[in-house]
Length: 231
Image 1 (cartoon, rainbow, N blue to C red):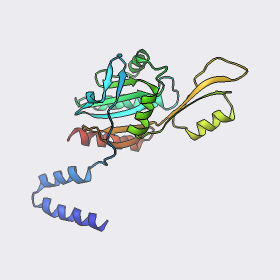
Image 2 (cartoon, rainbow, N blue to C red):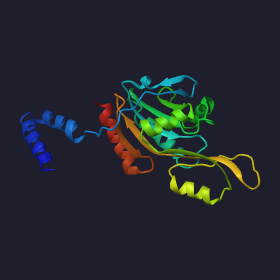
Image 3 (cartoon, rainbow, N blue to C red):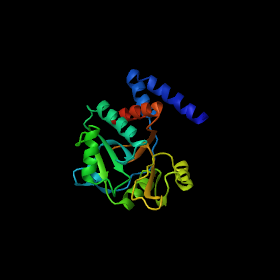
């Protein structure tokens, strides 16, 4: 802590000699610096138009990503509303992009995602909805974005202890996918995934994680976006 204070004071003295331009440089480079997390690996998924979507399409862009699925009635609609607000707030920035990746690829084919994108007014040239193979999406979520992701297939009654336990352990986003009734039980798929937004810079480095249901965290996302977009 003492070393950090010495650095700040030393830099303050030096840039003070340079006047206002020096202080603006100090503010941008030191006080507004963002954390550096992991490098996002290459990936290849499919967008809502049915085209292959590779990581390189985002080269040189600043973007925000999240994980959703179209049948989700919990956090996903709220996430997509916030993504729409980001789209509107940063419409003037040509190098801003958004990604929403489904965690239910068996259901969310390209056409389904296209309908969902239209529902939320997504600009298809800048906000991409992606699907693909479940194994690849799960690996990308866990090892690439470092977010929680889990699925569970089971025979259960809607109010079973197992179903309640799964929702308790993984509450961030979940849904029961109805199947055929049999013996009072319903075969279904439970999906749990992180509802956080992830900020990625022009070099595919993760620079921040933000709660999609917290106003303070969302305001921080906007500020950090401005920093990256203006650099």
